[in-house]
Length: 191
Image 1 (tube, helix red, strand yellow):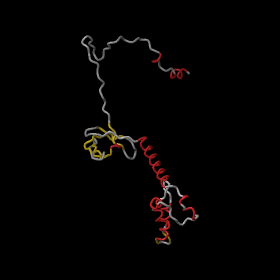
Image 2: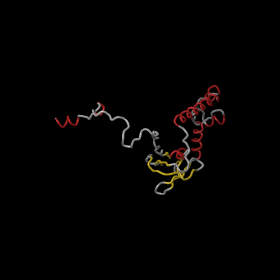
Image 3: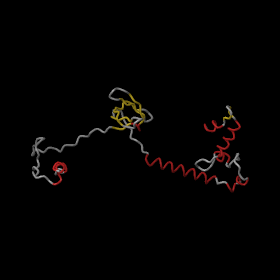
Image 4: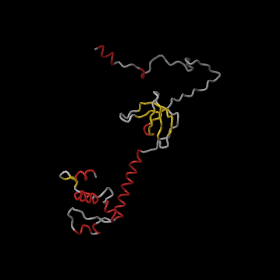
């Protein structure tokens, strides 16, 4: 529309007649569904300034409205399928979660913070260790997973071991083939 308005200026003044003709052509241009805006409103194409044969506006030359609607519906379904391939809802966060904030310029996750407030529209107030407050959408927050301690096997009364004492027999002293050192450096020094 801005291009239509800019093109309607001639000799330093706005020409409404030129703008009206451009608007008529714009309304007759077909959209993605196959029908033009004027064809959707009037159920038929309207005449414009482009030369056309008088029979080109006859009903047998025009596509049926159902066909255009089916084509538009099919295009909309393809858009939905394409969006749903990668879209998935993110789990909500609660107050006290440790998160990383994504920098909108570099797209890197390096500002840590803690959720201090949960908003109604998936927005969260995050407080950084420096004391700054950021309000961010859920997509720009990543949960920092806390390290879960590994469960220790229960100590039986019959075996008492210290933390540095092995209960299994010592491994053989000969080196296995998988633990050998590389000889590349020794070969380079020798030559």
